[in-house]
Amino acid sequence: MVFSMVMSFSPHICLPRSHMVMQKTIRCSASVSTASESIQFDLKNYWTTLIRDINQKLDEAVPVKYPNQIYEAMRYSVLAKGAKRSPPIMCVAACELFGGNRLAAFPTACALEMVHAASLIHDDLPCMDDDPTRRGLPANHTVFGVDMAILAGDALFPLGFQHIVSHTPSDLVPEDRVLRVITEIARAVGSTGMAAGQFLDLEGGPNAVDSVQEKKYGEMGECSAVCGGLLAGASDEEIQHLRRYGRAVGVLYRVVDDILEAKETQDKSEGKKKKGKSYVSLYGIEKAMEVAEDLRAQAKRELDGLKKYGDKVIPLYSFVDYAADRGFSLDN
Image (cartoon, rainbow, N blue to C red; front, side):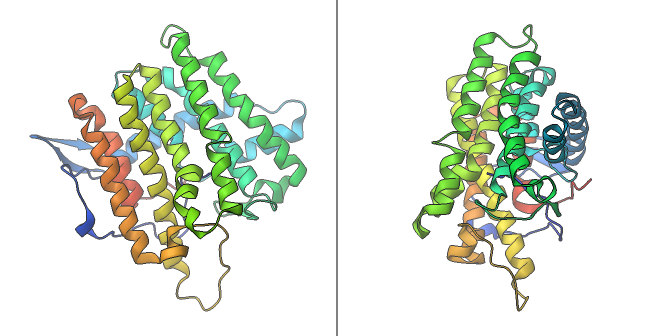
């Protein structure tokens, strides 16, 4: 259910350009051209500034209180060093695209990170993906035990919903929009969303790879973009553009992570074969790179439908290229 991971090795990857279908070229921290105008956009600065704000708000949102051990386990994952905060950043960017105030988006952004962290805690459990590490550090259950990790994940899911209700400024976001946001997150993490993706990853056959990638990874990206649009009052048509855009970016992150990991380990004579279904494990690196470029082009086509918002769409374009190229490091 992860939207993005921090890789410990060199993050840059060059995808083949022959498969690209796009009308715009947006580059991180570089001069970029959209239609007839050129602007300068520093994605790294935009992203790292928001990371600092979100980290502070998450620290406030998940204080240590009784029962202390559960809260300590919750904080261990929610405040983990090296987290890119991709879901909350995308939520804020989508909200600002439609003229929303980022203060209106921060509670939902924090909730998305709580939900994201909870899904990672549960994914790593021995009965699921059986991964003892996360972002180069011991996984939650490795530190606190399986029982406490389950409780921490269980507690983070509802805390996210509670945080949206209690902290979203009523003068900035009408109640009906808040309800739509909560409904969207519940859909994304539920039995037809991320949970279904984990089930297919455990039980589905090789042909389930498309569904696994879309449900387990695409749902978080889709939900993040859509929630930002909902908070700002985007139209139904605009929400559909965000939905398809976010899903494509979410899967793109995962596919590129798999490619990078495979490139890092392919020359080693011995290596642990990672559980789970991916385009790399099923088709190989070259085919996975083609899939990644198709996803890049798909995401940008959806943003073309929002071009009337001008420069405000640049951050979302930049996320696409970052997801594919990893042009800079966000490690803390």
